[in-house]
Length: 149
Image 1 (cartoon, rainbow, N blue to C red):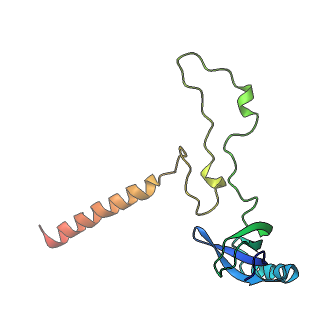
Image 2: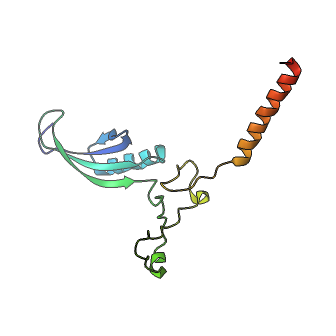
Image 3: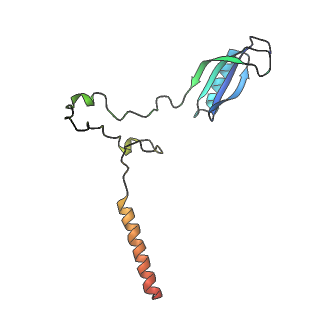
C-alpha cells in the first residue's frame, strides 16, 4: 500500500468493536455496498467511513471519518419520566422536608422486554402467589389423607 492511500469501508458493530464488511476503492462503489449492507443488516447500525492510510505497511495506521450512518434505533430512545414544565407549578418544599419526586413512568408505557427503571414500582401478582400456596396446602392434605400419616 502506498502512503496516502484512500479506501472506503462498510462496517457494522460486533461487540465493542466494528467489523468491516467490505473495503472498496471508490466512493460510489462504497455507497452501493453501504445500501446493500443496510438491506442485509437493517436491524443493526451500519456505517460507511473513509479510511486514509498513513503508512506503507499492510496493517498501517490510518485516519478515518464518517460518511454515512444507518442507525435503526435513532429516535427510539427512552422518554424522560418528568414532563417538562410540571415542576414549575409546584410549591417550594417546606424546610426540613424532602421535595416531592416525579412519579415513575408507568409499566404499561415501557416497551416489551425493557427492565424497570430505578425507583419504578413493579406489580406483584398476589392472587397467583395465594393460589399457588393454597394449591400446595391442598396437595399436602390430600397426600396426608390418602397415605394416612
